[in-house]
Image (cartoon, helix red, strand yellow):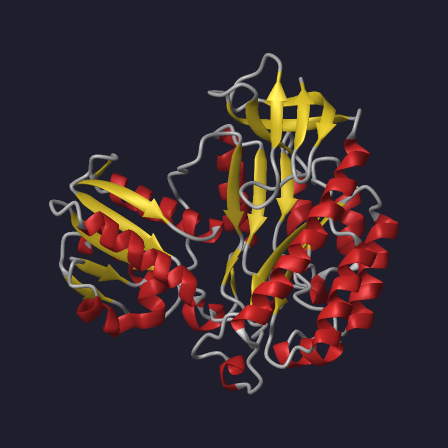
Length: 421
């Protein structure tokens, strides 16, 4: 069988697509864009993502002559409803069946069983060096009241340190130098195993490996960001000074309704601690506007919080009412027009903050990852810009895609920079 794989959604999904690809290729199947079978690894953590997944499936179905296999979060969230909804699909494969996908890939029907998928190695990395992802755990135990992830991906399941180290060494051997550590909340790593060292202990073991590589720590719940972890990040130049801490909101009443498990005072202390111990770090966050019963006053307080702390990067979302979550039944749903207006105000505020924050790089020497050399200027990122979610660096000078180079920032924009190597 010759197959094509389409991976939607987050990097965690991409890693699982890479596992599926390796599993199939090892069984004698062939990866290619002209494959007669198209595997679509879907996202469905909110209804909008599910719609995008369905639109992708229907778009492939218009081709008419290729068999469609659907995997991923859409299968986990909607399960037995899907065959009737999408008769164009030949097979649906649940995540717990990935280990058997080489056996069942040719069988039509609905393939699903209870359980979680946590294996991610060996895998066939689908991105070119130098950038890739290393998933250290599966699922989540935080149970935020707006989130569908635990019902889709299950509870926290940490990989063993030995398994992670084996994959890490393999990635370095394959030429990957920018390795993003990912999970739903990496600060919870090892809690299900009773680990005392947790994420900090794992990172220290990774850093024992010699070489010129860089680690970025993505998706850190505020409750898990400790002085010990921040100090570790500042102790080794191979850890990118990048703090990705989704706060979601700042007002205590909304935080309680969200089930976040911390207060505004905790967030203020955390940000002050991080700024004091790692002053050069880039600070990224995400925020939800229009959560049920959010008042104008609470939104204004949120806006003031963002203006005061001046996050380098910020991802904002309008609250999505998702069936099956604790927040679904909350009264006081905010009207879409109000949510959209709040979202627009927040993003306009953040654009100005981002523009001002980037000026601190002007004239400085930075490291850039060159991603695309087809255009002029070339396109890449400063190491302090995470792939796909932050701004970019427009790169001038002699360099090629895949290079990690030093260059001088010669211009700053709203979200992006121009770097001369």
